[in-house]
Figure 1 (cartoon, protein in one colour):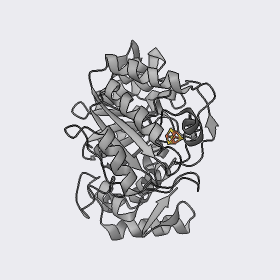
Figure 2 (cartoon, rainbow, N blue to C red):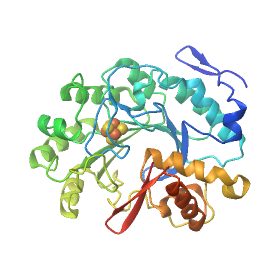
Figure 3 (spheres, rainbow, N blue to C red):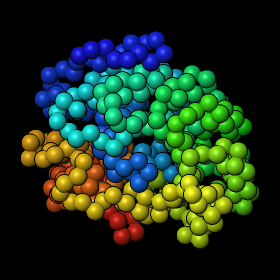
Length: 350
Ligand code: SF4
């Protein structure tokens, strides 16, 4: 395999995955595709491989943060991630709508995220690359330069009220709210791609009028491509975080989302907006038939990063619901996944 385009002068050659990994379809850092209301069918890259983050958000779908840090390191070398991505493509999977850097923590903590973005573009030249970020490291010029390579950046900014920030995002002590805010504005000033800002509201935490007014002013200054105001739709890391009412969501959306730019997904439909298919789709064609264990492995990898329902998994992976349900039942029996009832929905998580 040829060396990939260097990101800021660093050539990265995908490592060859060993035979055992390929034989068992053990994808450790590539997961999905996941049906995303904002991005379509998104193939995820996990740049951390563990719960490593600059925040420990009340609402985190990946569970409590194990390592709260601001140290940038190659937690997972770019070459390993890109080797998996190249294998995933070589296995005959359809191209996803987007390749997204995200996973189990803040992806820009990985100091080789620039190489991952450049390499993903070389493997899938026609597929845009997106970065999910909590904005905490955008005050670092190296992180801004890396994110500049992406086609879409999806930063979050839940609150501009210091006490709410501390309670909701539970940041590392080195991540001050003023620096975070300024870092995002600085990034915006030099970025030509699409910027989709996300604001997540938790009841009684950051749904205050003070935050609404501060965010309104901030959005005018930032001028993002789009603003998505959402609330909790899946189980969070901590029981204390709950969704805001539809009325509160509507008030924030009206204030923050200019009509021409906003795509505001319903809290309970954000990731179900493309879930109508049950058999076909962009998902790996005939995944279950070709490799009996592959469907279970893909499901386990996906729900490890994000709790999902059977319907969402079936649509994202392009598989019949009953095949997904059967795989989930087997995984649950083996202790690899667990189920949790949220309202009328059953979510599976790793
Ligand atoms: S929601 Fe995102 S920023 Fe918050 S703890 Fe989880 S991975 Fe980190």
